[in-house]
Every structure is written in C-alpha cells, then in structure tokens.
Amino acid sequence: MKSASDIHEVLAFLRQLTINNDRTWFKSHKERYDALREPWEHDMQRLIGLVADFDPQARDLAVKDSVYRIYRDIRFSHDKRPYKNYFSGVIGKGGRHTLLSCYYVHFGVEELMLCGGIWWPEKPVLDSLRRLIDAESEEFLAIINQPDITTRYHWASRSLKMMPKGFPMDHPMSRFLKMKEYLMVMNLDEDYFDCEDWVEKVAADLQPLKPLHDFLNYVFE
Image 1: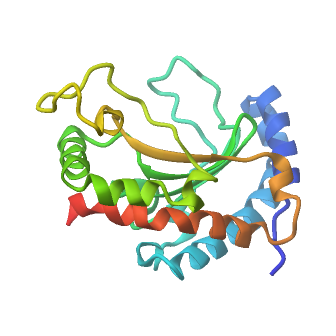
Image 2 (image 1 turned 180 degrees about the vertical axis):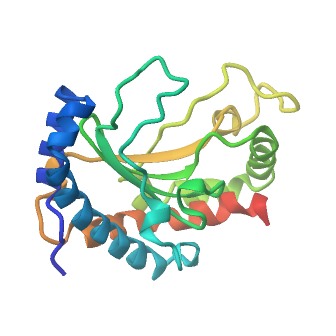
C-alpha cells in the first residue's frame, strides 16, 4: 500500500521550522503543518497495525497515544524554542507513556532512526534488568547477536564507568551490566524513505527487535 505522507516533504518543513522556531512563523505555516501531520499520523496508525501483527503489545494502540506533540514543554528548560524539529512516536502497550521495552520511530532534522528497548528505567527496574541479564546471559546474547539485529542496530545506551554494586569487576557481561538503559538504534538517511511503501519497510526492520522486548519485559511480569 502506498504511504499517505511524503517524508521528504515532512523533513523539508521541519528544516524550515528549525530555522524559524518561533510562534509567529509557525502560526503563519500552521495550515501546511496540519496538511503534513495528518497523513503522517495516518501512516503511523498503519505502522502500529503492522507491528501488532507480530507483537501483541501494539494491539489496540491508538495513534493519538503513540505520537508526540510538536510543542515543547519549556516551563523548566533553558531552551525556550517552542517547537520540536521532529515527528516521533512510541509503539507498544501504553504508547508514549509506557515503561515497557517497546519500539520508537523518529523522523527529524538531526536524526532519522528506529529504536527499541527501555529508556531511562527507574532504579528498581534497572536493578532487575541487570539481575536478569546476569542470570540469563546466554539467552540475552543469543537474542542480541542475531544477524537481523547486528546488521541493522547498534547500542546507544549510557553506561557507568564502574561496575554496579554487587557484580565483580571481571564479570563477562560487564559491558551490559554497566548500561543505564537498554536501547538499540538503527540510524537512517533520507534515501531510506525514497519509496512508496516505507511504512511496510519500517515494520519489517522493527520486527527483529521483538525477542529483545520479550526478554527485557520479563522484569514486569
């Protein structure tokens, strides 16, 4: 099925917004924004449906609960730019409010990427994830070393300098036990979207992450 939105046009608008990130400019271009946002959200809803075909946690997710608003919360920020220069959404149970390992898509001026994993987990969750990886290291390594993952994704997680308390310095899984989050990223370029069926393409590239989500989400069961 042909995509409703044109990512090249979306990015062209976002580049202009980056240069003119103020309310006056945005108000005068709001009609164009709406004309781009609506078909993009339509495609995101279709992407949610395709992901739900292989991952039940995406079922019944409405696009309004998945995608982020373009308006930035500047109340407590030194950066007072009112608008984001990207469109993005979370695909998984709970949408953008989820605590689970899930999928994330990001179409922006600075980055185009597909992601999967757990972002900024609270300490009790992070502790549980480290214990799980320690206890089930063979299963974890088998998942992340699948060619469909290693040829597409890389780790983009913040890490401790030292081993977390309770684990030996020479632990064979030290790289992963030091991580503060478990996030894999596939970086894209604009040429990736130079096709009519980019929604199906994205769904296919997200699918290899499902075993990782299943593994990480053990800690919530």
